Length: 293
Image (tube, rainbow, N blue to C red):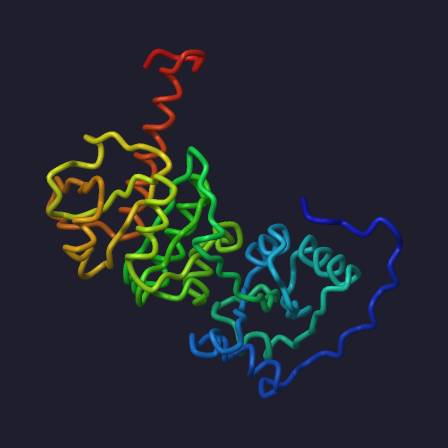
């Protein structure tokens, strides 16, 4: 639940002066966060949309500032959200409609955005449980796919997503939008290459599963063992032969029609739900599990 107000009355903040110019320094700076080099230099990114900002607040993301366009913000609940956060001391700036549209990525912006600090974690901070499923992406170049994979990883249990090599930026506007707020609940790790994640996986006894169209085993014909690290290659090149050799299991998703491959995010979803589904089946057949399947 979102906080609806502090326990004790708090003096309302002074009204924020309305920024109307598209050339305003803050507006230009926020607009510049569309570029990866600026996001990495500043250590912040722009989150746009009522749901995304709502999720950022609920997950206690490191929000630095709200950007609000009162003329565009038609949602009463979002207006109350902004008022509550302002009373709680979260800085905000109010923008005119034209100024807000100039930094928006949407055809019909809803009038709410936030500047949020990037929050990468490290492999050393990830502590697997007996049911953890981690995803490692090797040189995945599509930010939309990356965001969708983060969202899918969140849906099966947000253990963590490891970004290996020259991978898309998870804080790219396309990735943030595709994650539908999951970017704030799934731990994200940067790794230079394959060695560090594999060493970490070995130290925790994780099963390493690789994926390849050339693998001999279909993804539903093997038994997975949790905790697990699922390693996915790039959309265009897949995993390197070296990476494939390092996996305990290598699996493929069979293609029955004329298509030769699946979108990376779709493939990740198929594999993650097969892995999680096998765990659920195993729970059902254990003593006291409530089933005999």
